[in-house]
Image 1 (cartoon, rainbow, N blue to C red):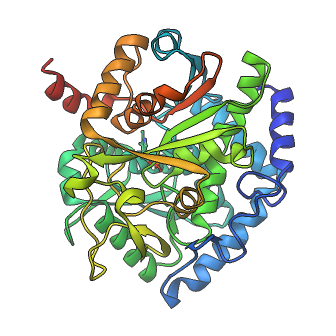
Image 2: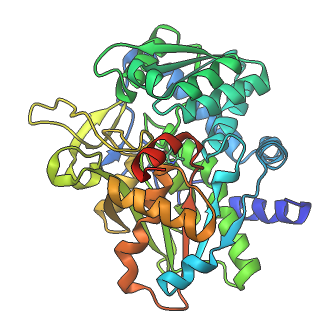
Length: 418
Ligand SMILES: *Cc1c(COP(=O)(O)O)cnc(C)c1O
């Protein structure tokens, strides 16, 4: 980003002085952290003061010029932003419309998660914190957090279900090389939900730690804060579309939703613009009717998990059902409160995308454009087939490629018999 663009960034952010979703006019979340009926802060008494202080610190830095300068400098010189907005010629020909890919896969550490980890660690530093904790499922957020901690010289503890430690060992090795302590969690099903419970438990006994949550989930202010740190994605899309096609908005925006951070970053500055159709992919797994799924919007009911109210995969007794997806980054039993809200009011359209559809889309993107996407991002690519009948030749479709496929090569090789 050059100085001129930085000024434009400032103008964008200043156009929503509250920093809330979609800019002026869309006053979400409300003062209690709710998006409609979803969100809030359902936390143990002992964390109340910690979370209040965090909220105040976040609101203080959001419109602070020196914070923004430090953050944007890291995004540019460390992460490599802006990430390209790439016109995908052969994919566009195939689908009979104009498809642009936002290349978050080209960021340092290979996905969008670093945007948020760096924003939160700068905030932690300003708050004088010295110990960082985080949860991770596939290990991507763990690696991003361990990276940010190495960069800042801070202690880092990452909670990870023992099953995931074994499944995602490369990321465990990376975290350890970066200096983080990986704590294998053996409660519940030994996966992400259990790692998050454990991180919250640790936070309760060590409230002076700074908890870097990896998605638009958790108690207020996390969903708003993570969306804010990811909003650089849509800020760049706006500017890049203006430069490339002379118009600052697309007809369609598409992204995959696990907890919802890459999607919310992609939608952020367009939520208020009704010309933009917004379409999300959630992980269908083997199919929503099979029970082997992580499609929270499709099968979830209202409940509370990890400090917030949302749609949740649970049985009649309120016990969380274990989600399933081929993609470790999407198998979370809940969903960010903003996504639950926007789906409910019809602002976003959400499709479950099954494992086989995602695999097919990953292969297609690889062979048509030479880009091997993360299996999570492949769920977003599969939305093209869901909407193919609605595209006009001149429509502008922007899809967020949230990460690269290195970590998924075993899955791809096995599936395609390569
Ligand atoms: C973690 C991850 C996701 C899912 O998380 P969101 O918060 O929903 O964005 C998607 N894509 C990639 C590449 C990831 O690493």
